[in-house]
Image (cartoon, rainbow, N blue to C red; front, side, top):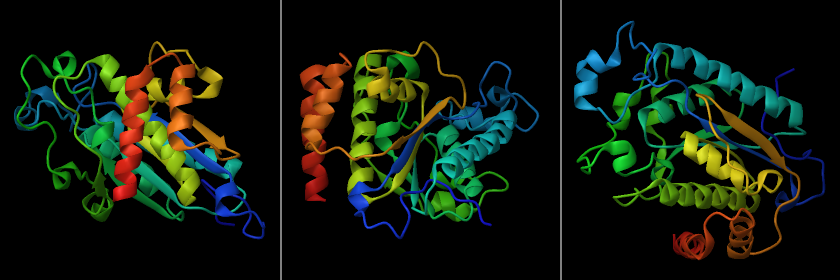
Length: 275
């Protein structure tokens, strides 16, 4: 029989879509091509013209492309283990090449499941001197069509809807982690309201931020997230509180971000209602 992945309750269930079980996860991209032991096309990416053109946007390394396939299998296996029916999954990725390429491989690895990819500018890397250098770069990421690798189905990348807002320069680690946590909780709320499962493919600090607001890890901070590091979970019962109350409470419980995050969530909710 065809495998099942990222599923909700049985179709015969009388429960409404709001009461269905939802699966979600947050994943760090696979190995980037500028890593200390990485190769790209059998050579060092930092010696290529591609590096000269896009120094802030390394693609996946050769090993990263292979590892991304294993990540796809892990996601699918988790879905099969938890599934009780069929439900769509949205793979939402940071706009950086290494994330888009990881997400594309995962999407292809979920063949047979209704899946689509989105690019969220709000899930991007820390946008400040800590990562980018002292001067704001004029262009950070390459065009989407240049992120397509051999073996990709081009439409997965080129037809991906782009959402979110690019961070404001200069951003520091605390600001970025606040942004990541708010975005994660926004998707968690949305998954309950629209009846879809989701997977975020992003950066290490986003995985750390998202995990820190999970009730099981509230107030804890992961010291390190390796390439492909992720957490996958299922939401058995959707939240009953309003989005602002829920997210604000979780952030307060994690002792991370305070009133600024609460206000940011309120603004995002208002923007979503206006769209």
